[in-house]
Amino acid sequence: MKKMKKLIILLILGITIQSCQKEFEFHNDTTENAAFHAPEAYPGIILGMTKTFTTNSLYRIIHGPGLTAREFANMSTYTTEPDLVTGGPQLTGDNASFSSMWSSLHRSRGIAEKILTYIDDVEFHDADKVAAYKAYAKFFKAMTTGYMAQYWEKVTLKNDPDNKAEFVSRTNALNEAIRLLDEAKSELTAHPGASSIIDNLVSFEFSFENVINAFKARYEIELGNYQEAYNAADAVDLTARSVWSYDGGSIKNPIYANMVDPGATLHILPIDSLGLQGTKIPELGDMRNDFYLDYVPLLNSDGDIPVDKVEGFGRLEADPIPVYLPGEMLLIKAEAKARMGGANLADAVVLLNEVRTKTTDVFNVNAGLAAWTGNATDQTAVLDEIYKNYAIELFMQGQRWPIHRRFYPNYLDNVDWTNMSLRKGLERKNNFYPYPDSERANNPNCPADPAY
Image (tube, rainbow, N blue to C red; front, top):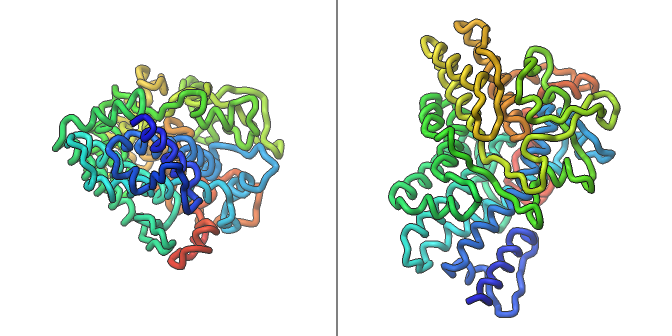
């Protein structure tokens, strides 16, 4: 049994780290098909899929969208980061950052799809385990598809080994993600012991039911399903923590590894005031500013933007990274109420003030401010303040860009793309990313790139 488990671990490493290879060789001819039919393999498969996401995809989600949404400034001499900083119609599909994100998200989703393909043929003799693994695979497929839909105008719903995956609108993709999350939740409801199996497997702190509701809330608000978004966010326990965990050895926090580790080659650093400008700059005394930034006198590679060192969730090599932040749930509820308008505006302001005044956040993302003093009857003013708090609260979470696009859909209309100085200061540089060259070269169904 120990030998079989060792082979299974080698297989999972082969799937997650060397996914571009077509064949895998092992001395006992343990094939991928055999591993997915072995019940004892599934904990390793789940952990391998999670590791692929948390060590690779997650950093790309922070890196590229953070540059596109002006959270970070370029510190490198390469072209990857400067191209994201200037963005616009000149951003092309050869960019290594979002190309890597595209491939790594598909890689993680592919493992989830294999779980769902094979698991019903496996004899577990434990219905809770079957439900747990199926629910987690459905969540993972929903999450990876959802991240794609946040950054690309059209995405695939499933992987195709023949490189002929069909593309659908991001609206359809988000609806599919919600369907998968609902199915995952149904699995847990029907098998009360399933949730704890995942909670105890994937991280030292994980609340699977809350994670499902949090991602459902994120996708519902993006689709404009305001009551559904409110309900899903309201179902999240704000005192529960769910994190992606790292051991600090072979599995290091990717923020630390890329932006803090003394041996790292720095490509990006956070911009002063969280990259915010004008009326969106954090107020004096906003504790979230100092939570996320270690203020030091540094400049970006061009010497024209003040930058700082990272604090927050990447200070140490074993620091966990939140799967979602409780403050996001409060802001989703506030946004949902604000967008419904009328008498709901007063409720939106109450929820907004819960974020502004909180001092007991379970991740210490506390604002410690006074209640908002703006015009609570002005829907635009309320929404602007909600966006500002999203941008501060969710710093380095990969969410500022899609949220900015949702709040200010016409922001890039009539931009003078020839003005490079202007482009560097834009709050967002693109509406969506172009498709990676690798996808365009191999998939005949790849859509035309967006204008910017």
